Image 1 (tube, rainbow, N blue to C red):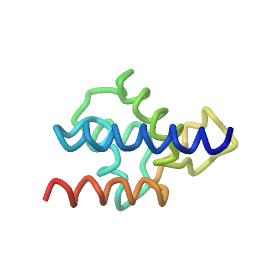
Image 2 (image 1 turned 180 degrees about the vertical axis):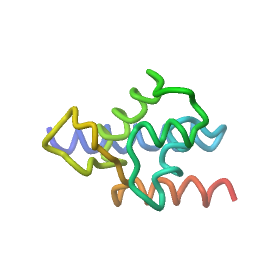
Image 3 (image 1 turned 90 degrees about the vertical axis):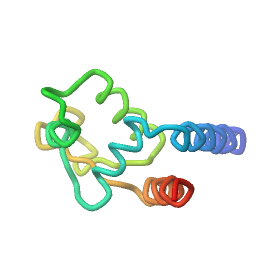
Image 4 (image 1 turned 180 degrees about the horizontal axis):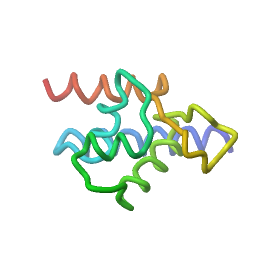
Length: 103
């Protein structure tokens, strides 16, 4: 069961990589924003030139958390206003792959 889950995760990552290589999406933009520092949703939204935190940004952050591309600075408190996010090792590798394939 665990092997099946790992394979499914790898296939999803490969699909996401292919999509990212075709055209940068919100997913890669958020990863790039978090590349060198931790940030909260509000700051990520500002860096994306959004007027407010969009539903799509919330979905993207949840997807990145689910796929372990990013991690929370306060993992035990879901709704903390001080919550920030940073790249995991997996996220750094994925972002590096995107950048190297685009170059």
